[in-house]
Amino acid sequence: LPATANGFYQYLAEREMVRIRACRRDPWPWTGTELLTNLRLRNVKRQDDRTSLVIRRLLEAQLSKRQASDGIRDLQLAADVVFSVAIWRWFGSLDFIAETGPLHLPESKV
Image (cartoon, rainbow, N blue to C red; front, side, top):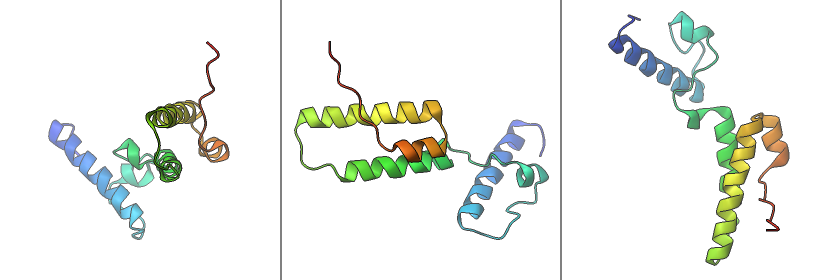
């Protein structure tokens, strides 16, 4: 691809098509571009990476258990979600995230 702004956009479009073909389980290789065939990083959007997908599934499961609640419980749930995502992203491995699952923000003694 040319080293121009247009070439950059062509690269992004092809990179996204590689992700879509892989998700559809199309036969490999998903592109004729040697760089993208051999490059492991294929997600244009962070929301499509493996770690983000696991985090999303865990949070959706946690939120689906939520029952009608008052504002205090909503604030605690929001704090737990933010705390969980911060810790998961800090340590970052899929094994760590799967093992710890949703976390609860420790109560402050202040």
